[in-house]
Image (tube, rainbow over all chains, first blue to last red):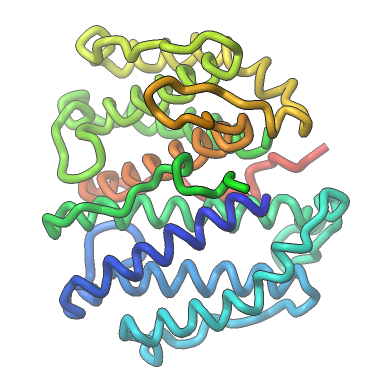
Length: 157
Length: 157
């Protein structure tokens, strides 16, 4: 479980670095498909991971902050670092016996979700949205960040 | 591990169904970003999963067949079913102790790859490319297949 989170975090940092080389108006421009702009996509990834993991840690109902307050690369990047610090211990301390713990989600599904299901949802969510960024990157005639998981040093040492 | 493969297989089938509603010329049209057309992306996902899992099963060096021989929805879908039948037992019988087995990859990396690394690479590879399809789907003014992992019944029973 941990390895796929580490993969996502590493790829996300590389996309933030990529963003540093792109004019901010391009990062904020509304695009076809996905959920809008490049920067809003990154904000949404950060916020989604945080709110689900907060729920697993017993703090449900975290609401997405208004994007207007975070609509610059610097602010989204800072939010990502801040939320990362908060979620990382939970991911690091994840154990197989937590797989079947249940998260109750009011008004959503009576049986709730297995913790393992939520964790994998968060993983797939980020990879999916990053795939969208890779298309927009080519529209901007820029090389996207590699999505390869092998060869990133995640399995060294 | 299994659950993320099951997720990918389910989502892939839904994309094949989605393709049934799209004119074949749109499926074969070269698009910006990614690796080309919608159909080639699906072909590439199918072939990549198969060749890596074959390597883990001791059959390295499987080469990508020429796409020209599979350039219709029906043929790619049949290839997907055929390869699925072949890889599914390996995924179903995956156990945690296989994580650290080593795959030697000549000319690639001296230390080779951990089996767990390859499995996660295959998972992330498919989700990433499916994210690209979701953008092209909106360009075609069609609703993409949901990428949600929760609520798919993967954790029922």
